[in-house]
Length: 273
Ligand code: HXC
Ligand code: NAP
Image 1 (cartoon, rainbow, N blue to C red):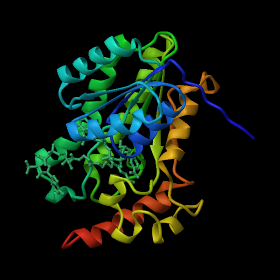
Image 2 (image 1 turned 60 degrees about the horizontal axis):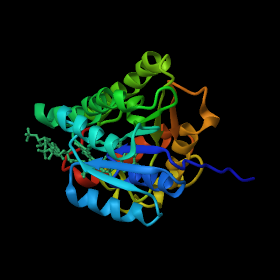
Image 3 (image 1 turned 30 degrees about the horizontal axis):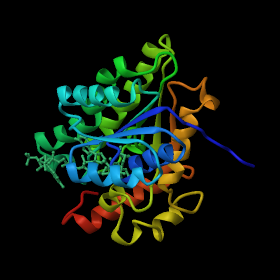
């Protein structure tokens, strides 16, 4: 069976799209003909992503912006709009994470993750709206299993990503009449990513014991997530909105929870529990 995607001439904007899973999504759209904008904080990440994405022959724009800075997010969309016009596909995936139990987490430590993951998603959504193709745009937020599974050492991320899920659902309602679909992808453990480097025991970042915890018996790849993103952006998903879709090999609760507890044993002197 062949599934083919064609995003020729479309403008795909990936916020937080310069490394890892989100960069994988940007690559997939660039490979399938889109004009791609990526944005993140660090100039070196932006430059490297633009160079890598340009190898597909796509037109690529890189913008430096922190999702915590509402005005900078607005400027990023204005710059991208001048270059490629209205946005057909918006992916919002900037995130921060580290292991810390609540009693060891400062007010600022909790705040920084909520500011990047949740408030940052709000900033991206709020500033993007005037730049979205209406009708027709597909918006994809990147959430995490922590949004529905309570996990030790992840209170900040659990709270923030639960908010991302609800923001996604509310926007699907509010923007539906503008012909804009809003969905979220919830990746499971994805090999060779920063999330895994921070949250998996060292030997497990690209396989070994964690993959045995995944019902499908392997870690995910950035291509697995990119394929779902392309489906959500395609006409095949034209009646899909307000959905939070796991892409996790079947049951993140079986794999993420013990994985993170294993990482905490390695990284923390006295992990709780
Ligand atoms: C306790 C910590 C901490 C740690 C930082 N803080 N790291 N507290 N344990 N390990 C506290 C600091 O002490 C400080 O509080 C506050 O957090 C802000 O820290 P800064 O370093 O000043 O923040 P900043 O430079 O803005 O960096 C943000 C960051 C950083 C989140 C802390 O790690 C980052 O930039 N991350 C982006 C990349 C990333 O995390 N990718 C993984 C995404 S994976 P005080 O009180 O001292 O001021 C993901 C889900 C994966 O999201 C799911 C896998 C299954
Ligand atoms: P990653 O490589 O660290 O990607 C995070 C991206 O966001 C980078 O491009 C980073 O670039 C950017 N970013 C971070 N903070 C930002 C800020 N304040 N403003 C703008 N950009 C910012 O992480 P990843 O592991 O691939 O995770 C990507 C997404 O998938 C996240 O939303 C994460 O929650 C989710 N997820 C990951 C996994 C996994 O297995 N890895 C599982 C479930 C969910 P700069 O540093 O240049 O800003």
